[in-house]
Image (cartoon, rainbow, N blue to C red; front, side, top):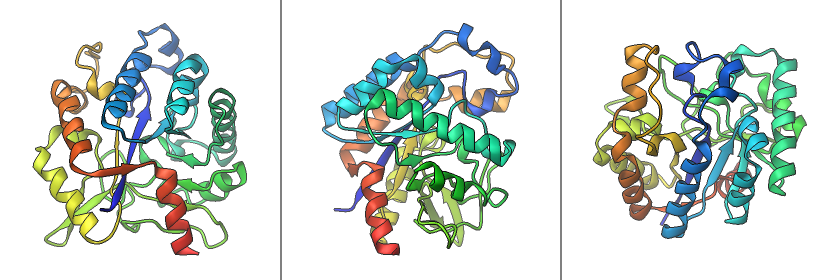
Length: 281
């Protein structure tokens, strides 16, 4: 059985990219926080299934919920970085990015007691515009990134990137492990989880993972704790498309995840990163 990587992007309902133009970062501390309770529910789900995963966590969240980060680490999961405040990489200067990834690593290592070796850019925002990001990540002490969606999407995407693990910079040891895509009739299809998993029929995700595993590759799947929280506040000022993407099928997500976890084998992303690094060396 091919082991796949299950990953959780630990951010709250008000920190998502879809709402970045209607919720000001300056207002975050005044909003209802639900990330701790939702992530505790995810931890319980994983414990019941006996699986380990990687939690890409915002430094902002870790700074305010250190108990949660310790609980993730104590349960045997990997704690990894999602940056500090969910800023897209291409919106930052290289100096700003360097401060962001160093600070998030410092916070997460302090509260988790783990060495932080993995990074995922908010909204998969490492793409063809940001080749400078990888040397900065390596200098900060990261050994792998899972920040690329090798598709074209209205919010993100690096269409020409490889579908599976690759070295993005010949001068760096760091490797990039893109989220999963499938192929059909010569086209790449997004199949890495998140909204695609929540909105599309379960049969599509099962087919996509089986296709990837049939090629001998691990699927890289992600979701967010807010996706299993149908009771979260509604952002009425958001565009209709954003609201449809964010709120549709929240009530069925937990059951779909349980089915997914039971149908395939799973491990932490750092385990897969180490294997791929050896293969690429």
